Structures are given as structure tokens and as C-alpha cells.
Amino acid sequence: MTWDQMQELMWPATWETLQMVGVATAGTVLLGLPLGVLLVLTDKGGLLQNQPVNKVLGAAVNIARSVPFIILMIALISFTRWLVGTSIGWEAATVPLTIGAIPFFARLVETSVREVDRGLVEAVQAMGGSTWTIVRKTLIPEALPALVASVTTTIITLISYSAMAGVVGGGGLGTLAINYGYFRFETAFMWIIVAELVIIVTVVQLIGDRAVRALANRGRTGGRTRLLGPRGRTPAAPATPDEDVVAR
Image (cartoon, rainbow, N blue to C red; front, side, top):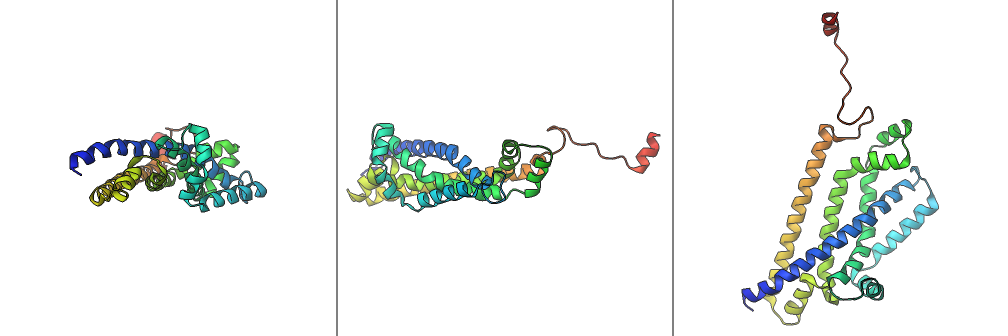
């Protein structure tokens, strides 16, 4: 197979992979973020402490995480066909990708939110802040660097899952690698696809690391939760004795 022939096949497959991962990431964050926060809020000592609910949610997350992705894809074929109208192609692959990544991301969110300083939460509570206010103004902003790192890890995991989806006709680079690298013995073509996946993962990791560092630096320079006064205003420093004498 010539390089021109490879390019004609790779560009559409690359775009399918990016679409697949992008849609699955959006669905995962949309559903996994509140689930992870809820795991923290309902745990012992949480703002919405409810042990039965927490145990049910935790068990559901653990069970979902323990199912191998290849089995999950096969088990969800009927549901996928009902939801998107087909069980093949990148659109269909987004369904098991999202469902498989939600519990994984939820646990990462849980870990990130637990690292928030408990003193900040108690301070907002003392000021009369509601649970929603604490989540929106304290927990999420304070955990944002760790949450961005969690999203980066999830995207990389979804890229590897998307390649696995090619086994059942999920489209993208995974299907291309299996059809040509495995069934047609185009070994060189398969390794080129592997190299492209490595490049994509590296770029995602670099962007994620840079975003995390930027958010962490912002936190050290005044981006943390503001408990006193409106944003953009800082309390005036008390006058020194010398300044007080001059003022008089």
C-alpha cells in the first residue's frame, strides 16, 4: 500500500476518532461530574450525608467499572441500536464509550473534590452558604486543577477505548487498524496508525498539563475562593503607627 493510499484512508478515520472521543468526553463530563460530587456529598460527614444512597451509588460505580469494555460494547448493542438507530460507526461507538467512562471519571472527580480544604467548606457554611453555593463557589473552583487533570486522563482513556471499538465496527482508526493491519496483513500501515494515536495522546496530555499548571498558578496568585467581600476587591490593610501619626 502506497503512502497516498494510506492518507486517503487515515484522514477520514482520524476525524471519526476525534468526533467519537469528543462526543463521549462531553457526555462523560456532563454525567460523571455530578455523580462524583454526589458521592462526596452523601458520604459520611458530607453535606448531604446519606449512607444508603452513597453505598448504592458506590456499588453501581464499582460494578460498572469492573465490566471489560469489549464486553460492555457487545452487551449494549441493542440499547445502542435503539438510541442512535445503528450499532456500527462512530456514532454508535459513542454510547458504550460514554457509559463505560462515566464511572471511571466519577471516581476521579470524587478524589479531586475530597482534596478540597475542609476549612473552606466550614467557613462558607458559617456564612450561611447553601449546599449548592458550596459546590458551585468552593468545591468546584478549588478542585478545578485536579478536575482538568481528570478530564485529560479520561480523554486519553477514551482514545484507547475508541481504538478497541474498531473490533465491533466502531469506526475511526481502530477499525482501520483491524481491517488493514490484521485482516490484510498491512503491518506497516498498522504501525503508522499506532504512531498517530501516540501523537494524539501526547498532544492531549501536553495541553492538559499546561491547563493544570495555569489553573494552579492562578490559585496561588489570588484565584482561590474569596470568603470576604465581592470579587475584585481586597480588604484595605491596616495603617501602621507611623502612617497613623502622619494622617493626624
